[in-house]
Length: 183
Ligand code: PRP
Image (cartoon, rainbow, N blue to C red; front, side):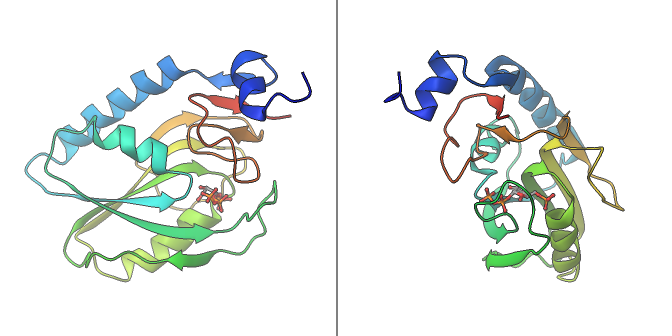
């Protein structure tokens, strides 16, 4: 048993509680895709995934959107390998695209304290996009301090440490197919 990987423990041994199942993720992402398709009809948005956490979500989300769209990525870091936010946000990789005059959608896996998304709002709105909206799969509403609208939210979750579907524990377990709570 002790030589089992954390992945096996999560998926086969029920070692962690499932918070959001594969099926719930699939269904909600389908709805978000339909909504974004309707809201951006006639436009060609650029979707910017925030690495690393959003890579699984954005991959599924863009395939649920029936529009011509572009994809780019940026990378920031506030957590490092810690379980709680350090309070500092750093840009580790900037976008390549010129977003002036473009319809921009920032895609996050989770809004926790809200620091990252606030940093991105300030940074990207200064580049004069035609519009700037935010998509997040998860939000911890009770602790997130965000003074602007988050336009598309997958699920509101309690203040617990979540892993899987892009979210890591010490950089692993991002490949878990559902969202689990790690106590
Ligand atoms: C996570 C997550 C968000 C941010 C949210 O990133 O992907 O970008 O934290 O937290 P906040 O609302 O408190 O700012 P992290 O820095 O852990 O990097 P990762 O995506 O590479 O795991």
